Length: 102
Image 1 (cartoon, rainbow, N blue to C red):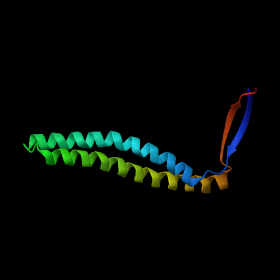
Image 2: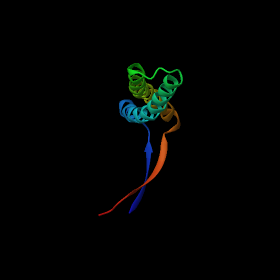
Image 3: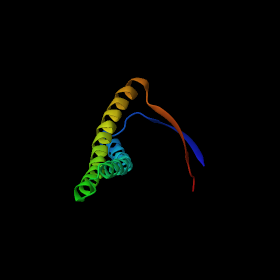
Image 4: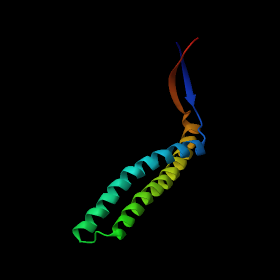
């Protein structure tokens, strides 16, 4: 294998934002489950175990996925813009990679 040093001087903002969106949706699934369980537990404690609590649980679950996707998309966009600005002044991130030789 050949080892080379590369420098990341610029990244595509939309590409980074798309990856962050996927991570946000995964985060939203975990948080949505927690929110749905809390809504269900609260409805059970108050004696409101009906169809409305199931709708609220389902709505809370999907709302967290959407909120996570939006928040992480914006975070990825801002992060990549800041990185591009800083990398322009500092020279970027230096990495060593191994390239297989065939």
